[in-house]
Image (tube, helix red, strand yellow):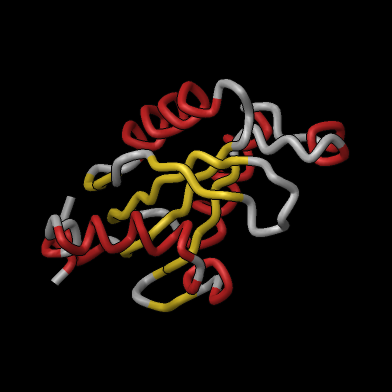
Length: 136
């Protein structure tokens, strides 16, 4: 598999459930089996930006994929559903797993997420660790 055939991505991961770390660990394990090259930040806590008092566990994953944008987006949504992200969870403001494709092929897809501290903390960690060097 040639790196030249691959597209870079950066995903924001989050959960606000009592078992958030477990949800995130399971998601990271699944995602790492899908991507040949990937790096993940440490998990860290952030307050909800809605001001509802909930605490989120967050992380950021960066890597390379042969999937198209649509294929990757669909994979992420299916993984969210597998982890219980459904209408009832939304009504209860329970985020079992949130996976957002923030950067695709070097372009910011979700500007609001990109600007938030909950994303930037993990993103800066990956930058400092050299996670993007293989994408040059």
